[in-house]
Image: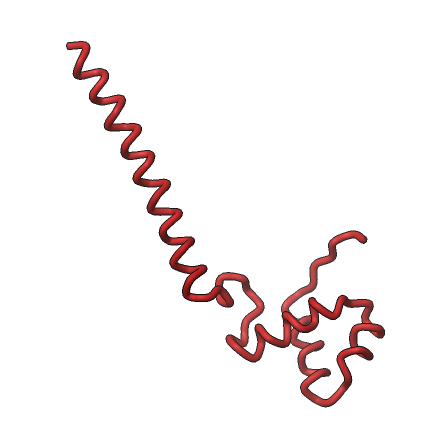
Length: 91
């Protein structure tokens, strides 16, 4: 199955259908969605009101992302310092 993308407006429309009482299985069947996608949209809308990944990250995911970025920066700084030490050692 080819991966499809849906606009935030479409996702909101599907969530509103569900919130107005339409059963999940009818929405899934009628709009050819996966149950997991619809469930994810409903959960995201209820928790943050946004469908963007960054808005729906847990605190642990946000911290992990921050630490990975910091780790990458520190590795780069370490490589620069190693190169500087090699250059200074040649003089």
